[in-house]
Amino acid sequence: MDAYVADWLNLLIRWVHVITGIAWIGASFYFIWLDNHLEPPQDPDDDARGVGGEVWSLHGGGFYHAQKYRLAPPAVPERLHWFKWEAYSTWWSGMALLALVYWYGAEVYLVDASVADLSPIAAVGIAIAYIVGGWFIYDLLCKSPLARDSRVFGVVLLLLSSVLAWSLCQLFGGRGAYIHFGAVLGTIMVANVFFVIIPGQQQMVDAASRGETPDSAPGLHAKQRSVHNTYFTLPVLFVMTSNHFAVTYSHSYNWAILVGISLAGALIRVYFVARHGRGKASPVPAVLAVLLLAAIALAISPRPAATVGAPASFDQVRNVVHARCTTCHSAAPVHPAFPTAPLGVVLDTDEQIVAEAARIHQQTVVTRVMPIGNLTAMTDAERQIIDRWYQALQGK
Image (cartoon, rainbow, N blue to C red; front, side, top):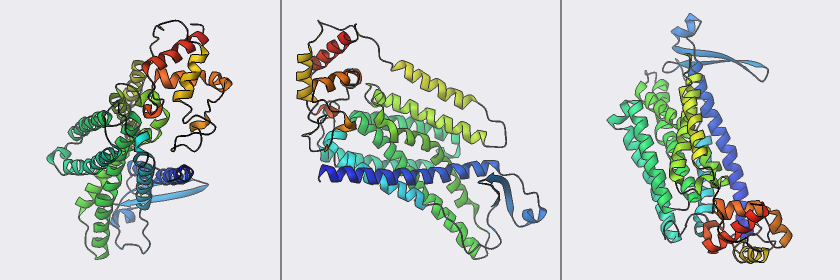
């Protein structure tokens, strides 16, 4: 595929993914909020009609009165709005983006020979197996006795998510491992909608349409999966943006960082779900999340290291940059995956190299994520040259 065409596909699919993701998450967050704000109906006639709760709200200059039935209304309305296409569209666009960037570009974005010597085909096959297998394992757990206690189930999910993060980081480059962690969770979320939530709702609608009292079990199962989805949301959103933060995925303990930040996201969501309830929310989950994020930031903060050797000359640095970096970071990149320089960073001239000194040092020495996947085989000795030159520039 032509790199220019791939760039446009990336742009368009990513745009669709963000738009549909906002729609799905917005609807999901709203209904969690709505459920937690319901009050007993004030009108006895509403209670007699089966209304279990109601809430008044104000938005966009208008008053809204939402009611929730304990099971179903006396008659199913002709027009009933379903919330499912947002989830499906988010998933297919996300998978298309995953396939375009991380599978089609597996040699660049997924495989890292320093982590595991996998062929692109093997790496993609393993990635697909993880995504499919993740749903089946989760679904079996939800149907097991473990799911009867939400706290026990939460601990089990945390342990399995940790194993997932660790194993992915032993197989793929950090960037690819992170995005596939999110792909597993995202697939579980949309599969919950497709296989449990929507069928459960359909059973209730069918029963009500026949004039029967709906069985509450499908609704309860759907509610369980919906609650799980809301706790997965913030970890998945972090993963969607993680490729911008090499300080996380490039670390030697990248899997632990991924687990820690995901747990912090889930705790933040726990706090807000409780805060939207009628009772007083404990600040403990939010405090724990902040402390966890602070601990991670402190633990992975760069430690100043003594620079070994005399300052490197600019000629040495220029040779390293032109040999290892300008394959992609050039006005005319020669790598087939990049029609233009990534992030617009061009390193053809001496002036451009000096202007990007801090970025070059950060990416090649501190995080070591560049060259991406070390495609151009930059050596440790060459990274030391950049380090000695940069430290000299800083007067250290």
